[in-house]
Length: 406
Ligand code: F3S
Image (tube, rainbow, N blue to C red; front, side):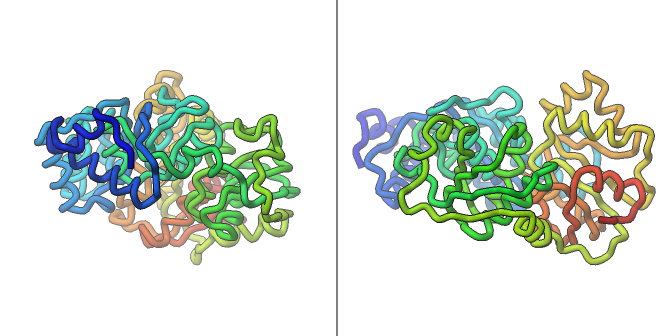
């Protein structure tokens, strides 16, 4: 791999041990993927901060890094953690203490403590063609596909290494040739809500993992539709990039150029969409004890919709309803009166955490309704939950009545 003089000096330890370690990680990655060189990047997003993924050994490792004066050299945001720093949600004390230590260690290194999986909603919005090193699969697929930034699906350590050096190896989706679609998905099913976009992503992701799908037949998609489609593709199929012909930046004007020559065709009718929905349902009992919305974290629009849906209603005494977002969006929504409007119903708008990366299972919940395909995909394994997957209006109905009905 060709390195510049500056990169060689980082690898030789002239900029300190943390930077040297980071360069070693990046060079090793570059060799694995046959990258000819490193490239400068504009921003990083570090994920894997939950105690569930870090463990105690990981917590001690990141504290050592922070103590050795490691500092990021580009704007670096942090993904969701496992507790809400603004309120006590009843989570185990030891869990919260360790989770706080992890978050603080990253902040000591100069990362923004935004604890968000949607930093592009609140001020960290990469431009078309910009090279970045973001972790968090739902954010990677959004920046690559909808914003047209150039990003690989980084893990926590490689994103941190990139943040400490301002570099990433040149391979994968940083190269135009790797961004061609190898599956053309023709959608004739009618998509009515975010859960439908999630079901579409789950169906396609399960059929073609690690593919680059290009969709046709989709029109007038809102930002949140993309977020839910991408998160589902990324979780069920490891997808890091998709195109929508005539809509997303790589495929805006040159439909033909974005499809690889040997592209496979896939039809998605109402039947396949129903299969996508069904594969996300693992529910057994219709008596519900937990309703969770906001995976990925809710936008301001989603919070406003929830305020309307919950207006004049009360969450059932046997149900806990958590609505996940982050401090930036919650702060704005609070200023606009949206948080009060939601919480009058008894629902709780959380910040910093999410169901998958925290431990709501410690509060005894078991039977869950969500409109998130990503949560429906992971929660049975990560939280031991039985999941009903449906539209947000049905989530609100279940929260109010305590019963899930299709
Ligand atoms: Fe975000 Fe947590 Fe879902 S990080 S995408 S809310 S699993």
